[in-house]
Amino acid sequence: MNTELFRAAREKILNNCRKAILGKDDVILHVLECFLCSGHILLEDVPGTGKTMLLRSFARSIGGDFRRIQFTPDLLPSDLTGINFYNMKNQEFEFRPGPLFTEIILADEINRATPRTQAAMLEAMEERQVSIDGVTYQMKEPFMVMATENPLESYGTFALPEAQIDRFFMRLKMGYMSYEEEKNVISRKPVAEIINELQPVVAAEEIAELKKQVRLVRVSDAVTDYMMDIITASRRDSASIGVSTRGGIALYAASQAHAALEGRDYVIPEDVRDLAVPVLAHRIGGSAMSMDNAAARVQSLLESVKVPLEAL
Image 1 (tube, rainbow, N blue to C red):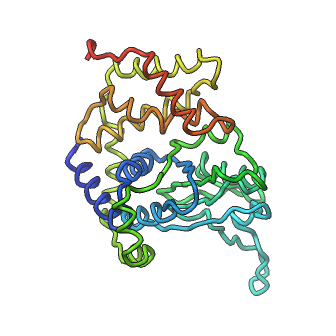
Image 2 (image 1 turned 180 degrees about the horizontal axis):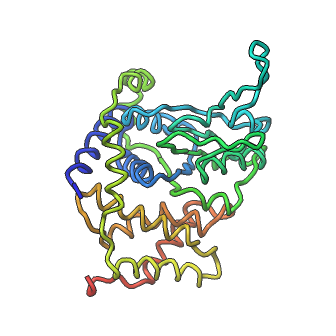
């Protein structure tokens, strides 16, 4: 595989996103890793930390179509998927696609929608398709959803069930910037203007090649066993939900993407440790456990599992 291709893409996307988002390189890289693995992101943080701007700048960098959907209790599944309407001129039904038929989607405050609407989003995320009046329509490719939740408010919300949370590839948190970074942000021109000036830095052909080559990153038996030891340990912990097989697959794929973006064609245990919290924490904590508590539980699991240094 061509590791230089990943290094170049990493730097181009990071430098482009840094024009709008300061001090969040780790979050931007996690979004890129998730994108390369065709996964989806659950972003939980307080309002005003740049969640929308992050995804808009990333979509601009890869030249992808972007749409933001504000989830509310009165949002219907057809508002997402589209409808069949009767064309009086042609005297036949025609399909009018909804906002889900785009490449990069920000599902803002997804837990404010009813379970029925959440289920419609779930089919699109998991199956890359939607079914309307018995007809199946395929989603665009690439296709990535970043759903947000506000941890400060619970009134008027519908908590995502554990089965749905498990379908998110990663759960991330933006957090506040440093003093100097925030000072620069509040004194510069509006970030919306900066994002509108951003240009794509990677072509569609490059993206397709990156997604193809990321699967070629080698993972030794020792590292795979290390992942399995972590997953098995999570299932022995009676205080949490065990990591599912889907979670193990996500950790394996994310480690490949992380290694490739670091310029390596092989995975090391440090890649697994770096990704354990964003990939596994929401799978063991569910909706009842806070992000900080779930992260602490994953860190505890990592401390209890032996790192296969000798085997490597």
